[in-house]
Image 1: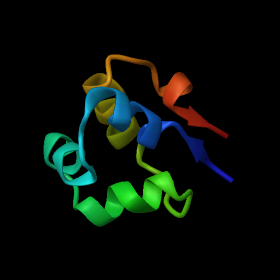
Image 2: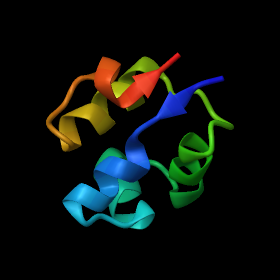
Image 3: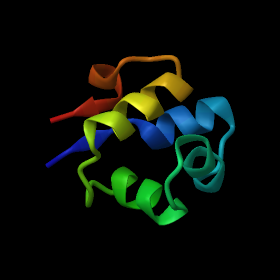
Length: 63
């Protein structure tokens, strides 16, 4: 199962799921599914989220 640190990074950057969703062009539900491990992001989405948090895809997602 995919593990993510999105929630942790969102807290650090003080972003809501809605804020992050707007920044990367997806729906808020998508961010929720990612955080709960119910959705595997496309490479582009993973890279876009990593860019928002100024980190690497590898640091954000653990397979």
